[in-house]
Amino acid sequence: MATLLYSISLVLLPLFSLADGGSIGVNYGRIGGDLPSAFKVTNLLKSQGINRVRVYDTDPAVLKSLSGTGIKVTVNLPNELLYAASRKQSFAYGWIRRNVVAYYPHTQIEAIAVGNEVFVDPKNTTGFLIPAIKNIHQALVKYKLDSVIKLSSPVALSALQNSYPSSSGSFRPELIEPVFKPMFEFLRETGSFLMVNAYPFFAYESNSDVISLDYSLFKENPGVVDPNNGLRYFNLFDAQIDAVFAAMTALKYDDIPLVVSETGWPSKGDDNEVGASVENAAAYNGNLIKRVLTGGGTPLRPKANLTVFLFALFNENKKPGPESERNYGLFYPNMEKVYNIPFTVEGLKDFSGEISPVSGGNGNVVRDLTPVKRGGNGSGQTWCVAKGVGKDKLQSGLDYACGEGGADCRAIQPGATCYDPDTLEAHASFAFNSYYQKMGRAAGACNFDGAAYVVTELPRFGNCEFSTGH
Image (cartoon, rainbow, N blue to C red; front, top):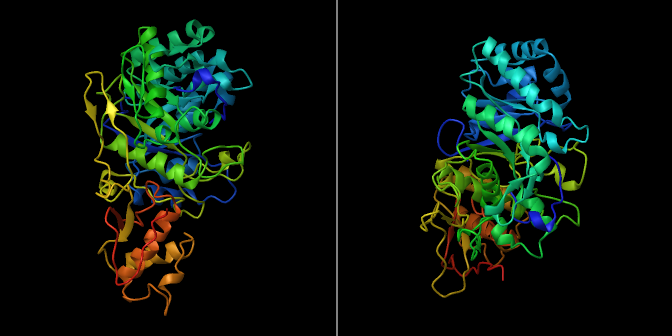
């Protein structure tokens, strides 16, 4: 991932799936000194129902750990190997033999990312990209894997010359003839897809005086109308992706699908990194997952199911750059969640976050899931209470809320105002709500591993008064 500051012309920057319908995967980066073993990571992926993963190399321990799991894997040929892959067919043969043939099909490698954000690589490897892709493809043909493993190259949004409004999306002119046209021809001929790394956070961070935070986080907002085609956008992610679709259409390659190979939001940042917080990261990723898994495309391509890889699996403490670079993780290195969001359709049943509608080209509005209804008193207030899910899960949630979660649990201590009724459900509800209000009622803040849910009526437990967060 490249941390790029986009100019105001890229405020609204920049899917089809790899195989099935809407799908969520994760990027498994390993630039950290305290990360768990590959075997533990594989068990974590399985426990969370994550069935797609992208890695940034071909580490044998990682690929072996994924063997026999059914998890689909995208591997990477790093930028530093592009020169060798572009110059020698024998290098490409050897690389595929050692890093793909040796593991496939027990490790379900479904795609190879040739390079990553090559156009912003300071070592200027752009000229090697297309020859490298073609040589790697020839190697796949040699080993009869070209029909089952796709090739592409992740593109940063800085490859766009124009992106606002989305309908005016276009690629940088100097990249069209030498790179994009031959790459699109290759993707079309091989039935592959364009990989795009899209980060609404960068655009919001640089232009928070212009871009609404709700618009960036898939929350309810009035939307932004594209003046050229009248389509209304309810989130920045869709606007970014449609700018890429428009740029592809302008070159007459609108038949090529697109996969979001990276997207995410940091849970922590430097003082000048506006919007980097746990609450915002939970809202962005939680609502994005909901939006992807429940189907539907973008306003420009409403029927295209989306495949999206979240960045990243872990916080990586050895990454250079601003504080945010080390805090994109969904999990801490000890494998605890940074924030509680689901990764499966089943998990979404207990997810209370809101999501904005998608407006298709036919003018119809499609909602991924019905948002939480607001209270009838017009206050718009919501609270978080416990479910009847069993004592162990309630106690675990209560311990987290009053401990690491930082909820104010003084009122449920013996003799305090909310100690009675002395039941686990009542105490857990108070603690869950305290945490939920502390987190600004953010999407995903009322879950506690499925032990809590959002209500729109003020909870009553004896004479205890629940915090409103106002």
